[in-house]
Image (tube, rainbow, N blue to C red):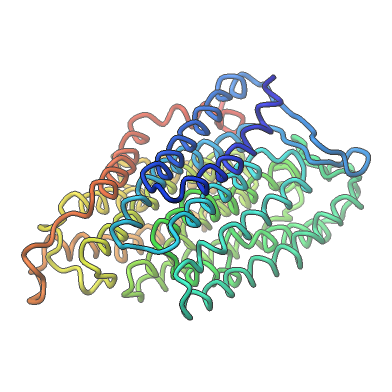
Length: 486
């Protein structure tokens, strides 16, 4: 029965998107259906925590295309972690979106919520994918279902941003990812995710393994490695709830989750450590960590600054994978969750600021902390988590990433992570500092106050989550136990 539940959970949000569409004339009902669907999905995913941590790996094949190759769903710890983060934060994002879309009187709200549901369905499909074919299908579905969200406003800027978004993600997936899948099948005779990887006895040369790893990681354009990162800042033309979906819940997390999954179940951590096949991409990730942070420091537009922050933070997870160390995988897996809670908080705050004040530039935020104390306090908490300062959850993922770097003999990466944390302080903490310690601008109306409660409640919960995961990281450590130190 558990096996059938996998397929049902993947299809559930997509089916419920029809109910969302049908209730479009009644906004309260539409949003109630959306929130209820997200809660039910999270409950269904959470029901697998016990079996999977106990060692179960439920699997089901719905359709066999070729012998041994079909539409297969299999649940393992990394996939469950991603599914829990995506489904759990979807409910809060949906509540937030209701307040944001109404507060800003956005058009086409029903289409927006329908595409939201389709995107989460694709994300769960990626989380549960049992082989590379299934992964590729849902990866493309996620790209296509989020395109209408990116171009939601329908103006020239949105269409241009959407073209960059769609162009880069489709080009990398079809040009790099798909050929890598075909090569994997030809070399190993399998595309099924396998503990320990597929290439141990395949006779693949070190150069060939390195080249294939490059194809896979650049083919996973959603991981936003330089130079294929431009789609992410370009997508900031979307409404803020979409930015939250892209940066914390579905799209970018799908990218870095796939990098971890490929590292563990296609190449194998031991194989990469022995061959050094991941070394090149490790340094690409290190350059992305620092380069994107430096660019973020130059951006006055708040969402653009957060976008480049995301590019940098995603490469922490890629670093964890490319270290070819179990502790690196643990740190990368932890950062999927810790970054999700912190970054979604920052985007929720950016949207709340815009909804209440229509200001979107960092230089315009002076003194706003007195009008919006909850919002800017949440921003401060989430920023500390991304920097990696106790008592915020982000300290755990950075701790294990640094341990992983030491375990892999890559002391230079510890320096990279430390410098990046200092840069985080500069470009993130400037925002609450301006809000609380600078005098308000002369044109700041006295009547400004917090955004609607539907915006403030989710950002308060996610900010609190960053503190909770510092105090109680055990659920993630139990889920990632296969890579934890014994």
